[in-house]
Image 1 (cartoon, one colour):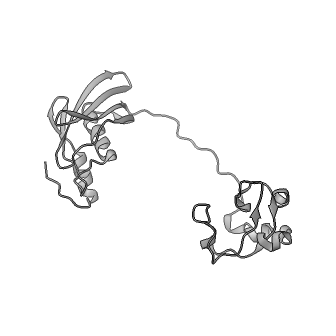
Image 2: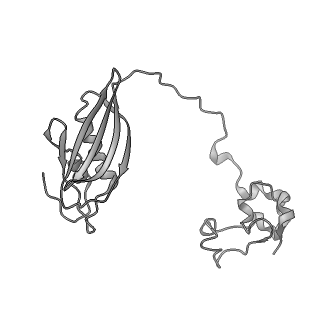
Image 3: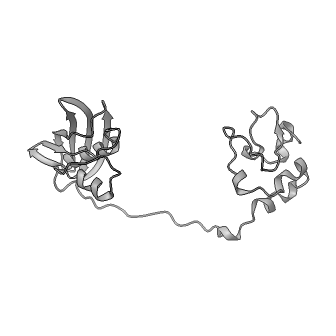
Length: 205
């Protein structure tokens, strides 16, 4: 196993540490990718668990995996994986994987592997819809409501203002927006009804 130092790993480093070393029929050991916090990345150790289990089910492809993270580990030290061969059926193989470090359980997983199966390859037909560039813009679609709310619906809105949220508030550099009463204080554009239907709960600026 090649020791890993605290650095931002390359794709080659990640792939290399997914190839676990087999030390017994159902036992494996894997190097972790170290980092400044020495924290074992959950997705990485889960991938190692799947790789270890797959070594005990040759000729079968991963079908599903359910992972439970029990406790954190130290990325400066390797992790041991034990695989229990729960069942080998005609189509599916089931494996239980336990990852340990210094005798402490870090992870438990249940994975299944399937034989290659031939099935129907199909998809629904592409619907006959207009091309995106042929559609009217928002201002053209709302032209019938140009007189409402002081022209709010058709006024130019900079792209930076289109991402307004309650958390960040309405940018001062953006056009003033209507005040909304009785509708939770939300932005008028966020309602699913038409502008006219919103008159009952919208007050113009």
